[in-house]
Image: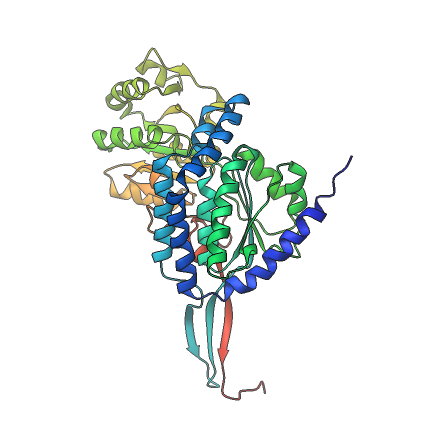
Length: 420
């Protein structure tokens, strides 16, 4: 029997649309109070949160989800502290709503400027990570938007309890419950129907695997900002500081391999390879990383497996690394252009000219010199919590914080001017 999910979704979307008007006009104090209250509730209700998360973890293990997904799904004291810290950080950030830019006086005496305003209703469609629920709701509220949250089935219990706590916080300060709306149906048909709700939703932001991103962008009637896969590279130049290169490469791969800004491919200049790879590959292997290398890389460790072309297209989100030795920086940049996802790319070099050229020519949401790809992050860039890392060129690119969740409108201050 075909289920009509529109009858389930439409009332929720209408409430969100109505709440968006109220959210757009909230003063900074009210928004701050909601976020600080939510932070306190995370600690007061920690036991309850972890109990609900345990249900999701047990289901995930029973379904034999891969370790990277289970790692992203897991909540513990540290991650609750991080979520609370993120809420407090967003609460402390300047409120972007109402900021007026570029006010100029025209020859007829009128003043023309641009004002920062909320986008409206934002739907976030995401997988695995319960912290996305808190980050998304906090950023959308602080930027004056209403948010509709559609998490994955694997995090249903965790997401539900977190949204319930947000609803309690909103209610304490008289803010309509629809400002943070949760879709608790997990059927994929719900997502398909949600993407048709262009009368109520102004923007869709998908966060998750390649399959989810593709499905959303192909089906949506609503504008989409993609938070696509992270197939990130580090290129170690012929004039690199080798100890720096080792430190950065180890951090980029093993610090948290299940994230979109983890390094998936290491490119090494042929002059650097004999001095760098024997020790670096050994260190990576000792830390559990499976190395898949080009023919030249195979010379530097008996444990290195031959890489296939498909490996260089793969976002592993795991302790697996592709390695390729290149003859020039141009070859490295061509490889990044062919295989990269325009997410995060880094060069390790002491040569200023080559570093600057890499910075200018490589196409990605963030390009780094002598730094780990793991640093492409809202917190690290000073934005506070982020809604994600956009790989879209239009409207916003890179980590999306408060300002990236607003739009602009023209405002005109006149004194009786008319068009002659």
